[in-house]
Amino acid sequence: MEYPVENIRAQFPALASGAIFFDGPGGTQVPQAVIDAVAAYYREANANEHGPFATSQRSDALIAGARQAVGDFINAREAGEIVFGANMTTLTMHLARTLGKTLRPGDEIVVTRLDHDANVAPWLHLREAGAVVRWLEIDPADCTLKLDGLDKIINQKTRIVAVGLASNAFGTINDAPRIAAAAKKYGALTFVDAVHYAPHRAIDVQLLDCDFLACSPYKFYGPHSGVLYGRREALERLQPYKVRPALDSIPDCFETGTKNHENIAGIAAAVDFLSWLGEIAGTPDPGAVARYSGRRALLAQALAAIQAHETRLFSRLLAGLLAIAGLRVYGITDPGRFAWRTPTACFTLSGLAPAEVAAKLAAAGICVWEGNYYAWEPMKFLELEAKGGAVRAGLALYNTSSEVDHFLEELNRIAHGA
Ligand SMILES: Cc1ncc(COP(=O)(O)O)c(C=O)c1O
Image (cartoon, rainbow, N blue to C red):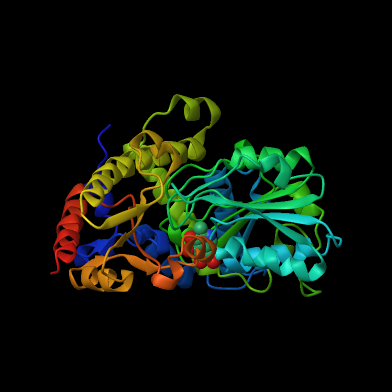
């Protein structure tokens, strides 16, 4: 089935501005259905939870429906395993602090040199409780994780392994199932940061066999917010920090204070938008058809179609980037290994600071990020941090090949001193 990019673009009011949005890894645009769901919440359901009156009951129903939608998005066993929060960072800080109560001095935590700091700093704080932090390092040649020493780094002292599914800087997809299996061998818990991966590939927490996973709906066409998955048995063993009158039941006890109801309504609409895409553009994937049903099957098919579209565009983008003299790409460049990367290109241009390149592109109506994008450890490791980081151009489901061509033309002009 041909990917109906124009029909998809028509759903996103922001695209009418004509700007080229290659800033998706920092946050994507939202379809009209998400805008409508947020507005409708205010019109029809605006209230706090668990009251006897209609607006409160509508709020309860919307939140329950959104938990189910996110559960389908990541293939959780039940909606009660979904925790809503302000963003991934806040949820991870909160969970890490809670997990910290279960640690003893000398217990080990494994983090990676490749991750966004939201999946590093929360765990480093646990050194205050006597935990020892061990690192999975990066291969600078292609910005992948070095896994050869995995069996030594994860060992009988390991209690928590925190790994990203994909790098928001270089697009590298990590072999998270292998890392989770190594953690499981020693009874350690696995926490997965799926923020950068979520808009590009289908997530299945059961196949991953992780204990926790976090992602951010604003990176997959929803509102600014965060979502945490916790395997029920893993959540049940924890005592989160909470105010005393708040519910003790899971998952509510992990949601400190009043939730952002309007955004939660928007999250459900974002998942429904993706399942609509699965209906109109879904690539029938025999594996997904056999494994899933209903909305979950549509979501898996949507993500397969998105992957095919984005990979096509990324091949064109990367070929154009590599043809520019003085341009260096960080990350996997071999098309034979594109299954191991997202369509996110990280590059530097000799003689030009990343901030200058991004500003010139912005002047041409092209949105890209520059700097470290909070991928603080890898940027320091690659000695890019002191030089202003790198430029990041990331593709999303609404981008087109003519946008890629226009971007490459502008970048060539910039590289030639324009
Ligand atoms: C890979 C990755 N992890 C974590 C985060 C933090 O997410 P949030 O902004 O929801 O706290 C980001 C945000 O850019 C990210 O890209």
